[in-house]
Amino acid sequence: MPFKKNDFIELEFVAKTKEGKVFDSSIGKELEKIGDPNSKEAKPIILCLGQGMFLPAVEEFLIGKGIGSYEVELPPEKAFGMRSSSLIQKIPEKLFRQNNLKPVPGFLFRFDQRIGKVVAVSGGRVVVDFNHPLAGKTVIYQLRVLRGIDDLNEKINALMDFLFKRRFGFRVEGKKLVLEVEEGYLNLVKLFESKFKEIFGLDLEIQKKEPKVKGKSSKSEQ
Image (cartoon, rainbow, N blue to C red; front, side):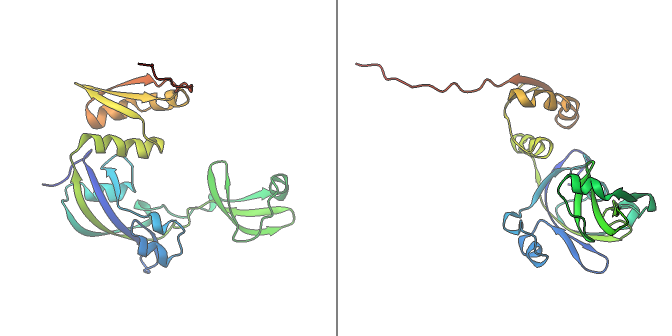
């Protein structure tokens, strides 16, 4: 049966440039080839189609497909965008020094939530390229859909992994999904009420999880 939007699937993938250079994968041996330090933790990913949990053009491609292997070639505009000269900027070198950083060509750093690559340093100015490293490139995704996921608990856990990078206790009561959330996460989780409703058709109820009280336990004497 073909998959549709909001279906959950388990997926293996290898992503390459058109020239054949692997830049990402869910397969450990492929990540080892490019020296990725996370290769030992690699595993198939679980995503909800049409919800931006993966590259949108790949999700769009998989809607209407079934279990099996596929390959899709994406032009830059459907992958990581075209290169833009406006994203190559000059930044005062003193901003780096104030943060105890020494900019050298090839240096990668995070600035205002963006990743930039130092291109040149001259006259107290640092030329930084904020284009995505794969901007302007055609890429190829080799995909293997392992299974569709029907279990509601597995789906909910997968969505929490993606949205919050952690899992909360939960239970389903009729048409309601109850999440037990620590105080520091209450406002964050509330932002995604409509997302849970859209995907699962369940109203989200957020309950504050009270911290455990540490204390000595005692046994009653017989």
